[in-house]
Image (cartoon, rainbow over all chains, first blue to last red; front, side, top):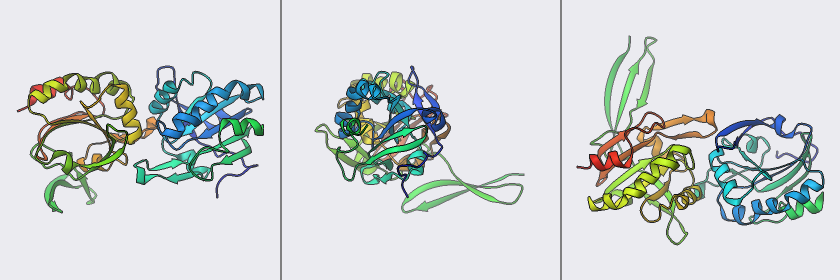
Length: 161
Length: 194
């Protein structure tokens, strides 16, 4: 059963690339506790839609989202922290978006939003979605119904705030 | 007291060395030994992006049959040693390898093809080094060279190695402990070619 509005996010530990690109652990408690977080998830770093539209959209809208009270914008993918760091850098996220590596898909499976992309040689990955989480509780959840970028884009989430 | 019993098993035409180790409790564990010189490469299938940006599959057979191949593996794309030293070394020496008769130089990692392609582009691998994705680690496991990096959030990866393969048979093998970078550089391989 996937996570729903009103649910508390499950406990998990991500890895985040530090200034040197080295993986540092970050717990869900540290990320979500007492904060308004806009978390969006992508199927894969360096894949077309994720790279050309989804992540750049959030980088562009970062200031507007912060103006509406969002403390942290975080991008999650089932990739390791080295890859997330390099990808974020290539897109130019700076300090606008926190890159979260859910390397073993622990959080992704716990929220029930995983998908099997073994055909493309990607294994278990996340579905594309965006959620607004306030102090660990899901307030808004937009899961893409099909391939493509619609309800989980920065623009859509901004409208819904 | 431990007793080692070496068993050679023929499995679907492929030779694999297994050591049956009997512990003091009398339990038997079977451990797959790492690939060795003289052995045929196990079957594997990799994904990669070709020059036109199309994702393709290639088997070890298609890669190695009748060819001289230098295959090297790294623990992870975009990790420090791999990016700063290991891959660049092979890109720089690619022409020298070709002069010595090597048909293909390929880099393997347990990463997906999108990541391998982006990393290859970053390192200007071009058509000098083929960036192969062993996405689910199947080839790495079959070689017996897995590296447990679960604690670092990377899961199961490959030990660093370089090998020279002729018509699918390993002729030269430089296998590192974990991700150490001591014997598997391009220079070392160039100097070891028969």
